[in-house]
Length: 178
Ligand SMILES: [Zn+2]
Image 1 (spheres, rainbow, N blue to C red):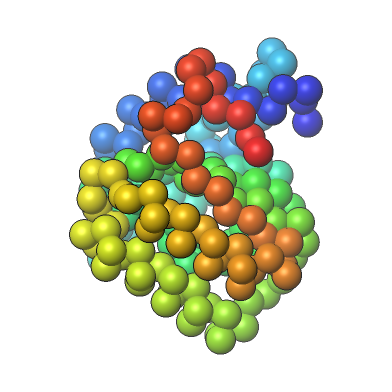
Image 2 (image 1 turned 90 degrees about the horizontal axis):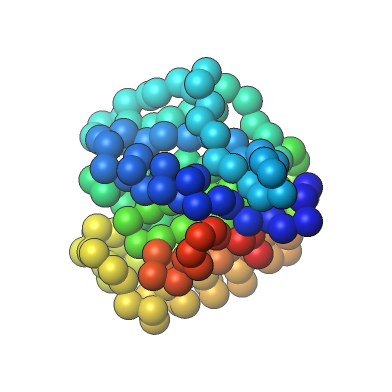
């Protein structure tokens, strides 16, 4: 895409502000002046399900992002993980949350069967109950390491990889993709 695949500082600031809203925000990541920039999908749809207000992109691209606001869980949902693997066009999905930045990548497209979906649910539940329902201010490193390890282990065969960078390790003035 570009030589330095890093999100610029203004994008980081922007998404940080979005975390304070009571709904998700979503968009695309595009090249901009030798860096990457997070832009909002101005045609996105906002869906409500229970207490959650989702942001749904009007189309998928290679690099996409969305927020999980402070009021919601600070880790990927089953649907987020599934989406990354299911759609061939999506290569990298970033999720900006209270804890930091989740980066999910997938090389090829697969539909996950129910057994795999159930296993992802189990892994997500473990994090949920270990982190005050996903809303603790900052999780223990052990929880994150276990979570990423478990997901990468069961989903690696689909070319999937998840990484996490806490906010205090997001290098100023940018976040570089892995
Ligand atoms: Zn999500």
